[in-house]
Image 1 (tube, rainbow, N blue to C red):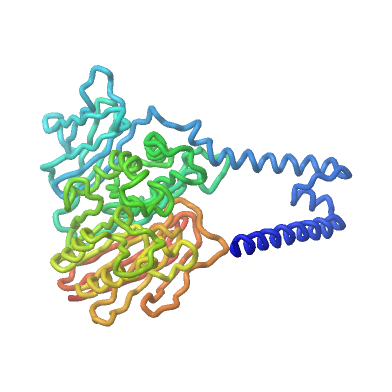
Image 2: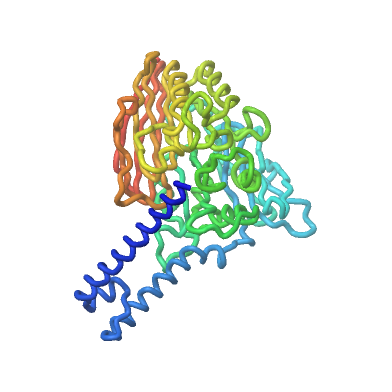
Length: 498
């Protein structure tokens, strides 16, 4: 009863305060109205019909622009007739290629013919994949028994032509690209194509003179829930992937670049922490069709969404930070997990036994230096388990962490803990094409457990070019270039020895 009385009193006080504030606000502004204030605030002033008309038109244009941004792509660019291909995981002797094509009614599937770029027709191999409406006519072909460091050309019976190059057998100096978070048609420009992705254009132009071995895209390839959700059926998730791949900003070079993908929350819904319940299976089906099957072969069993792979002298463990995590609201401690016990065990075993230099890939940042309302969604909300993972990393010869998600860049060093060991460095960079926070600054170092080296919040397009050099025995050199809106703004070198 007392609680009800208190709530009633609070509601009454808030109501009275709101009414008094409104009266005072209107009274003060009424005495100062001008032609410009009518335009700025959208007031309807009978004494100034022209200003009122312009204000009304301005408001109408703003509403139309918002509707255009939110719905033009959905209603006018479903892209159901899209045909495309893009390259997935490639090593020295195999390659995976994603193909979307609607075969002719009498065809048994999509026929893909592969040959070396300098070979004749007699050296062509043929693969056939089945596609159907259930997979949105998307399939992944796996080419095997290839030659290292060789350019290949593939063609299909649906008129798709593409290329890829196998990796070198044992590269010593090589580069990758790392980023996350992608939303077409942003920043909004009514003159743009509704599926334009300026980040693709920045990426393609910047990489043109460079030699990059692959892309690690760390999640939020689609935003099913932003700016507004148009539906939660499998067809809505599928359409979101299809529309990104239908963007006119793709170039042949980007489609020939090997891409490996994680998923994060926006492939399901913001801040997803409900494991495999609810929307999870609906959302993951198109993820597997468009992204997952083109990743490296599963390390931990069919259907596993975390995996490992090696490139040269560097080994990667790609985490799944969504499928097994506890709810953010749980108190931090031994019962709260980001990875789940099985994945944590696999990570620990890999860190203890893998002899190559090691990179751990996380869709969300390890650093706790990002404060604010979204901090609990990252490892900052799972500090108990984070310390376990960092201690396992420190016990190795050293680890580089790559992450994304926060629409900013931060480079952070984690010093040796109570148990000693190596320093760990994290490069966290995003978005490839999304908003950044122009005013609020949530990145701040407070604790000495997370040493901030550099932070860069600005820019709608950010990615990192990471170059690894293992040409000197016992030495691992890492060079990081931060690229913002198509221009390099910062670089950093990190050296580990064993």
